[in-house]
Amino acid sequence: MEYKVGVISGDGIGPEVVAEAKKVLDAIAQKYGHKFNYTSILMGGCSIDATGVPLTDEAIETAKAQDAVLMGSIGGNTSTSPWYKLAPNLRPEAGLLKLRKSLNLFANLRPAYLYKELKEACPLREDIIGDGFDLLIMRELTGGLYFGARETKEVNGVVTATDTLTYNENEIRRIAKRGFDIAMKRRKKVTSVDKANVLDSSRLWRKIVEEVAKEYPEVKYEHMLVDNCAMQLVKDPKQFDVVLTENMFGDILSDEASMITGSIGMLSSASLNETKFGLYEPSGGSAPDIAGKGIANPIATILSAAMMLRYSFDLDDEAEKIENAVQKVLEEGYRTIDIMPQDKKSGASSKNVKIKEVGTKKIGDLIAERV
Ligand code: IPM
Ligand code: MG
Image 1 (tube, rainbow, N blue to C red):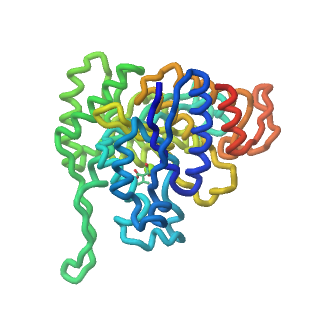
Image 2: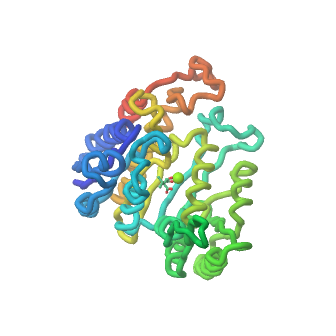
Image 3: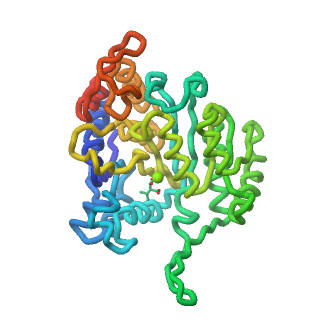
């Protein structure tokens, strides 16, 4: 089959990690007789430099015309880059938020899975890790604080900033359904995370989630306050299967979840709408401090490409092939620097396998070869 894949390489390490994901996709194309037709789309700082804005209307139209979009990362150093001297709506991140909203990508899936090979890179104690954990954060992506009205103005001579957090019942219902649907394909447990002891939006969230839960009698569900959830993630991550939550809580909790898997460089994500279209991106940022050094971990982007095959193209075998190739390369002891054992010694061995530190291109080559 032929597929139209939009490619947003973006800024920082984005182009480096996307190149490796394309390498792996091309290996899949060759093996299974598919064709991926790539179209580059400008977004983020590179778009600001070229066009003056982080995302042009033309870029949105190009994205809409694809079957799916694969993305690296956008943005730069927020204290030194000239992009951050611009008005907020002209900064790199505004491009990403506009793309999410324009394509109605309300469902953000962020799996956090601890590979047994990476236990030494996990900052949690061994007795907490146990047999590892496998959870998925289902984050609402087009509502809440990110898209509510905001302003900064003087009130009685005092500069005052306001952001608003709004959710309507339909927005909550559709993301809750996605959460329960995916739980049905996993271990059938949903933890809905909110701050219902303080926020009205959370009280509505809880009420609607309860209604949706009735349609899924097989799924066990519970409510958890967000502060408690942040604690439980480091105390006992094994308890979670699907964590269902709103936009801002999901942003914060997904960084935490990624870190306990060893590195944010391992965490893939998919942002989906009501159709088969999706935007696939690593959960990590553009890491401007290591950009161009050839040491960035491309695995999150490669795993995001696997999610694209699964969710947008229904190519389950091909997706699994990529996931197994990643697993294999880790088993063989290859690591980028971020997932080296905590003592960071190359040549250290873990269960008879010598650990070898490799760069971005090398690990991409190895994964493509295993495919
Ligand atoms: C993420 C990022 C974005 C977000 C930023 C870049 C706007 O942190 O995808 O988690 O906050 O959603
Ligand atoms: Mg984030």
